[in-house]
Every structure is written in C-alpha cells, then in structure tokens.
Length: 397
Image (cartoon, rainbow, N blue to C red; front, side, top):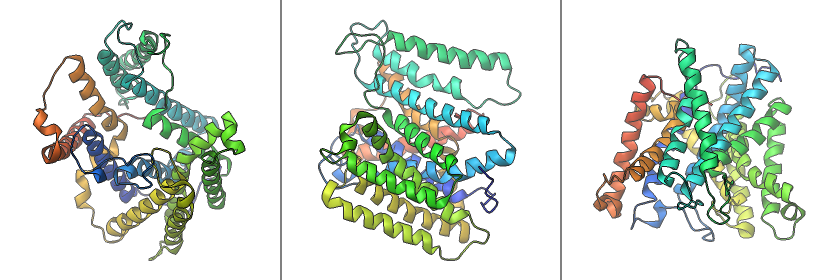
C-alpha cells in the first residue's frame, strides 16, 4: 500500500467534533434506557416498527466515524515507516481487543447462573469492565516498565480467571459464549472486515465504493428468506457483519472524497451526490426490508449513512471553512478518549450493584426529571474524561 500524498496531513477537528458529539449522545441515551415514561422518539424503535429515532443513529454514527478515520490512520503509519507486519498486527490486535471486551460486557449483562458462580455477578461484571483500563491504558514513555507489565499481564490474568468463574444459566457449563458480540464486538468485526479490504485494495476509492455495494447486497440477501446467503452459516455470519461494515465503508468513502485531494473545493458535489445516493438506496430498499436498527436492515444503514454525511458536511463547513470551533471544546474530552468514556458508566453501574449502593433517587428515574438527570450525568462524564485525559489515563487499542 502506498502513502496517499494528497491526503490532508493536519488534524481534522470536525471529525473529532462529530465523534465527541456522538459519544455524548451515546452516554445520554444509554442512561436514558433505564428511565421510565419517556417519549418513544427518545428510545430505540421496536424491531418491526419500520422507523428510526435519533437513538437508532448513535451506533451507525460511531461506525461512520471509525471509517472516516481509517485513511488518516493508515497514512500516518505509512509516513512513520511502519512495516506491513506492524500494521497488520496492530489491526488484528485492535479488532480482537474490541471483540473480547464486547463479549465480556454482554456476558456480564445476562446469561449466568448466579447460584453456581463463586463470585456475585455484580463483582464479576465490575472486574470485567475495569480490566480493560490497565490492559489497554496508554502509558507514558517514562512509566516504569515493570509496573506496566504487572498491570497489563495482571489484567489479562484476571480476564482469564473470570472466564472460568462464569457459569452459564441454561447448561451449567463453565465459560462464556458470544450470545451476541456487544456493541464493541460489532465495531471490532466491522472494523476488521473493512480495514483488511481497505489495505488489500490500497485505499482505492472505486474499490471501496464496490465494497459498499457488496455489503448492501449481502445484507439484503441475508435478510431474504431462502437465499443461499441466509442458508449458509459462514456466509450468513459474514453478511451479518457486512451490515455494519457498510457504515464503516461509507465513512471511508466520504473521508476520501473530502480529504484525498490537492486543492479543497468550495462545494463538494461528489459528497452531496453520495448523500443523495445513500437516501435513495434506503428509500428503494425500504418496501422490502423496512427500517430497523434491531434487524440491521439496509434501509437503516443507508439512511444512517446519509444523515451522518449531512451532519459531517455541516460540521466541516462550520469548523473548517467558517472556523467556528470554540463551541466544540465541551465535547473534545470524549473525542480524545472514546473507549474509556464508553465503559465508565458500566463501571459505575456494577460498582453500585456490587456494594448495594443507591445514590440516585427514584424520582430521577422517570419522566422529565429522568431526562434532566441523564443530561447532567452525560456532562459529568465529559468532565471526568477531561480529568482523566489530563493525567494520561487514556485507553489506546
């Protein structure tokens, strides 16, 4: 793979802003999920509703941003002189880490037999959420190596022990199962499939456009009764993950159309064209599959890609062209430390459950007070991330 000479070399603050906003909304809606008596438009739509809310856009937006960052990540490593082996190793380790964390989080949530486990499920979940911090923390160069090794390998050992402490509810067997991969696991699989392909085709724009078409077609076939894709287990597995890979790929395409050029253009007609294409594709496929985040329909992915493209275009215009950037400072702590801020609410939840703490009154678990509390909680998480970033507590896969 060759270095993209025309790719922007400076930091694209509008990508960071979109990431930070997405994570803030993600924390808000995750907390809101436990609040009763809130409007339907503030929750995930049911599987058969043929509709989507802004909540159903959060996960696709994160996948889209992952894709937008891929060309810059590869170019940076190539400019540093990293070997092919180093790049492949890094890619596989990152994907594997996301998948592992995702599986542990899912198993912490349900599927265990509490009566047969040696430790309470709440403590099991607390340890499962905490261990990624010492394992994947971005340690400073002057951090003592022996302490770093103790923390990292100690964390890995704890995860291994947790695996053997887990007792499945239905079968009574020892060990976890990937009931589903969890949000992080789904990101890991989508990242793996897309980045491997991106590397193989050398980041070629037309090849990525072709891959997007393949992803949408595979997703459609996998949701159609009686097709060879649906009836072949390994093809169905791949097609299922191509659902989310289509969003990562869409992000790569938009990123290349914006930033892989010598001279910036005032109106990016190719990007506008793709935004329209995403919406049209979603509209045409809707009568066959409907719009469903839970089912992962192609209309949901394409409408999401179109909305994300429009949102990013607006942020690009506002921040890169009009230079209005000060407002985004509020969201930047989350953009700099997305994995840690994602798992931190889970640590708080399992800590409270493990020690039987009930800090938030029930009054804030219903209606308007609950919504207000969720906004306050999301803001607190951003402020905590600002402190963590200051003291170099950052997860880096």
